[in-house]
Image (cartoon, rainbow, N blue to C red; front, side, top):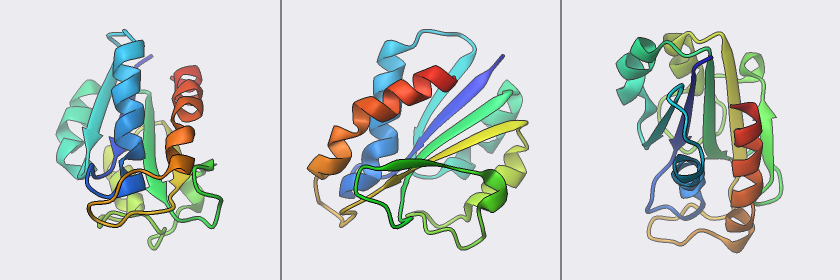
Length: 140
């Protein structure tokens, strides 16, 4: 079974980098030829690479505003994601998911506290890194 894990975010926008940090940590801890790790600010740049890999499962980690506590993460059902889902990126998630066309999709939204340009990751979000990483390891 093949999986793709995508950490979406910007290194320069505080808590928005959580997806990148999770993938960075996973790359060090998970050695498996059937898992592809991608860190990006622009997931649509990897459509072809993902399609060519033909994964059974796609896991996306991104910061978002779902009204939770900073650092809290939730699994968002792909069928409940609307065009206007409040992510920190331009391309609506629904379009990305439709284009990738993977059988099993897991979207992990992490509530951000601060996404101002030039800011550091908040303590609340940084403290959730290990928990999110361990969760992703279980579902890969």
